[in-house]
Image (cartoon, rainbow, N blue to C red; front, side, top):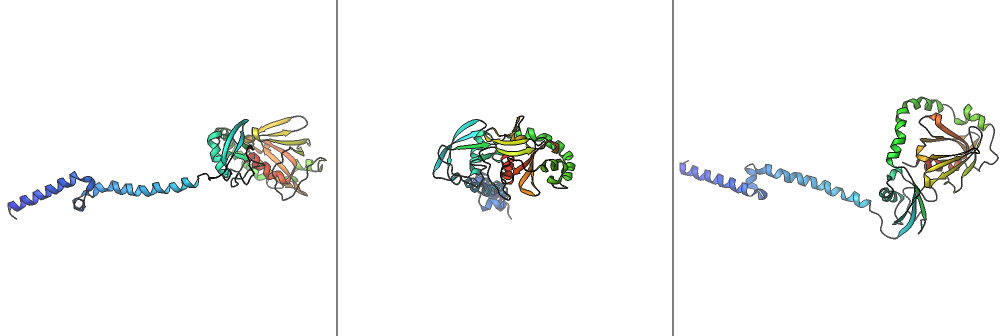
Length: 293
């Protein structure tokens, strides 16, 4: 090759290089061949990220509230009343999410009471909520729950042995409970229904006794998030979020009634035992106190 041809070839290569540098955003195939492919990598990453962004949108849309008729009602939480307007075809689960920013309680920690404990999948229309109706919500703020449950983890190891020993025989055969059960049904015991589930009545549950044989009455103060245990001597007002566990077992020979223990402290020794609880209210009591988390 002559010197003139070499100069021409070198000049062409320099010219092509300058054109590629001056048009980075519009690189053609000739630039890619000269090593400009590295400039196109950021574009490939952006294209890879774009589909992930689009995938998020359907989830957001699925949480949208239903359109249509809305209802205005009074919400009562912790002695405070709120005016709420919400779609009649909205579910309790959606209502909890809506209320979380209003009452500052996480949806999972809310219990909505509409003629008893309302299930998440039910709509306001199905539950018969009408204009001006009163809806109660109970639940504890996250900070309150954490402060109450923190000691529980420290004592978990000490609880395990007693739990295993308790389950060796039915509650109604244990000596602790036998001395109460042997006295028979109280005169004023409420009718019990075996294999039945009812919502809590609007009046207190009565006709039960404690481990001392004294008469017991349970009153559920949902607007205060409290359960009142009344005896002849006094009435104990207990915050529901202080109750660690609710255990119950049908009484042998009287399966329409249960023994129930409300655990008020970190160990099983703190259980408050109640006898002759009507079987149809056992699940409702447990769900009202502990909720469905």
